[in-house]
Length: 483
Image (tube, rainbow, N blue to C red; front, side, top):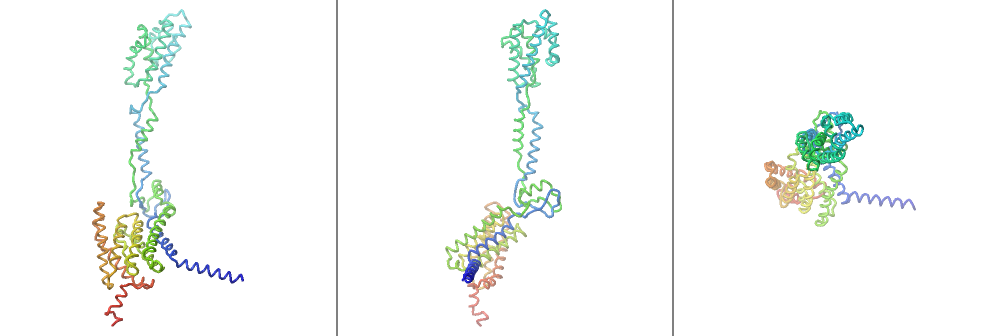
């Protein structure tokens, strides 16, 4: 009992597989798969196996416009270095350093400390002796402060209480001056000239101003230092002003036989050309766009052409005709990319489908085919519009024809449609090159018509469909079979 059941199950599985293989779903999946491969071959960048120092085996061009990151970064770094070198020459890059004010205050305190200590060591000593002892304690600071023996002797003559008051006034003034006033080598003398008046305003007795001012003036120094944080920010801002260097679409990256540099490798990496052909996301995008186009056609056919949508052979015919156009577009994109938008025989598919099936189905398929042609030619809007117009003109040129010879009028229909799109597009977007190539539309019309006439018998034979044109020819009294 088990063996017959297994046999029946196997038969059911086999029947299901056979039904699925010949189903409309399978036709759609195969169409998406084949179309995706064709589009991916034309759109996704070809992989490059290359390392720095190796010689290129072929010419490599940029498939799209990108920023040359290496060259741009180099120019930015050069601009940054140039600013850093010139920064010390710009006064606005300097700020008052608080450390200089502390050092000046310490210098003033050191002078008064030396005088007070020398007086305490020998209370009976005269001003000159105290001055010599103070100078000895100060050591090299005397020369640094430009103080003479007379300056120290003048301080030694001040009473102890007055000296303490003078010390406080001098330290306060020198600290305030060094913190609040920008002092440079050029302005030092001007600032020093105002010290006596400042001491007087601070309440120092006039008889002490001369001696104390010598100490304060000696402690003054240029107090500006380079603001590194400000310079770094300004240098960064300067580097950001450098315009990016672009690698234009179609621009040569490296020639065959040239040694690859680190810059070449970086550019190829940014373009996604290193490694396997196309990224996973690129493949996903191509498959999704193709599936959307096929799904649109399937939905339209299912909703508005119920009779034809029930026949798998009709759907297969549409798929084959559409794929044939994509193949021709891929070939033209590789051989003559500048003329491919004018020569893609999009009308071939619509003429075949309109002849063998219906005008409605031809128009639905034409919309999807035109969209995919635009995708294949890297988003070329003109290519999509030209394919859409050519396909529509081809579909409308077929009905009502009485023999194959009269199909030559399709040349005028298709050629005129492409020429009209070329003229209108060139005028609208200011592209004289597109405008000047309008006559290539008639070449497209001839190619599409010749392909249709040559392949129509094969489509009739393979898919078991007889076109109205074929029936009219057979019913012609002049046909050899009716003589």
